[in-house]
Amino acid sequence: MWLPVLGLIIGVALGLMTDLQIPQEYASYLSISILAAFDSLIGGIRAHLQNTYDEKIFVSGFFSNIILAATLSFLGVQLGVDLYLAAVFAFGVRLFQNIAVIRRILINKWTDARNQKNLTK
Amino acid sequence: MRKKTIITFTVITILIGFMLAIRYNSVNESKPRDTRDLWDLREDYMEAKEMETKLLQEIRKSDEKIAKYKEEMLNSPEKALLETLNELKKEAGLKEMKGPGITLTLYQDNSLILPGQMESYLSPEVLRKLLNELNMYGAKEISIAGQRVVNTTVIREIQGVTKIDGFPLRVFPIEIKVIAGTMEEAKKLYNRMQVSSITDSFIIDNIGVSISEPMEEIVIPPYLNTFKAEIMKTLDNEGGV
Image (cartoon, rainbow over all chains, first blue to last red; front, side):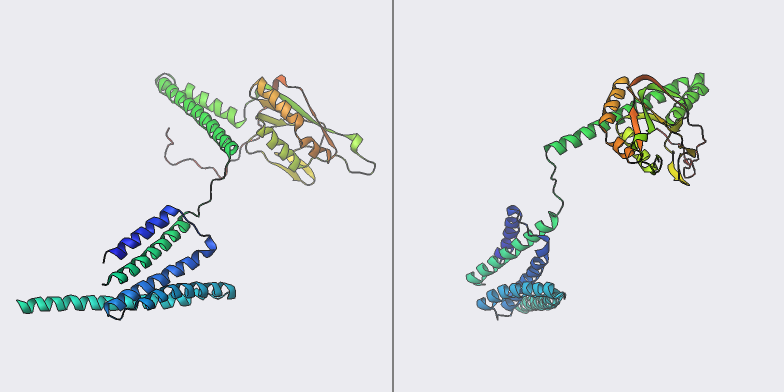
């Protein structure tokens, strides 16, 4: 359970140590990609808690979301329309929804466990 | 959680962390880079050093003055005040100044005037440029045609005549007297003016410039007009040290 958190820390450390930089023009693509990645991650956690987790769907969703988001913002830049907002909106809404579902599941689990404990007493 | 799922999640979080870190790096490191080379740095350092010496000198002067004030406060407060007043007058250009320096003479260069051409015309821009150059090369006090140049001096054209503080500069030759701090500095100033391109700017207006050898004593008259300090105000509380 703690391994993913450790992974996040390792990733941040790696990124900081390599001192890699991307030009300012591409910064927005990276931002939108990070958002997409977070969305996929939270979605994966939710699916896992609802026991509908599928490895293939999770991994493919992660990469396709990132690519789609970056493509959309690229297209937006070419067309002169702020299309990345669509991605931000979609991912933002989904993030909130997923987090809400995760919260409910966790609270339910917690109350169930407490009730069970009380019953056994 | 199955082992494989955990590994997948870990790989994904490593990726996310990596992206976050790169984003952080790119946001933070967009400061302009210091591209000064060794010479630039050396020059900047020298400048800072000079500034430091100047400030230190000023501090020492002020310290001395404070000590003097304290010492003379009891005996004769007027004397210290008078001395300060004299010093300030000197600084403001209200006193006659003597010292080593050079004299520049602007004369009408007839050889350059073609028939039908206008007479020599001294433009305020060029004159101002000359003053800037003189100040840049270490001039301490300057007077133009007997008019002392002070901080508030205006050089401008009024109805086709170039005037300095209201005094018309119409009659050639015009003498520009310049005092440098020491004889050494006067020589330096002389050399620098010799190679300066400012004379070319004057020739366009049919004016020649002759530069005298550095002299031991040049006398510059005091500023005769009254100072108009309209924007200046006295401080409410007495400025301390």
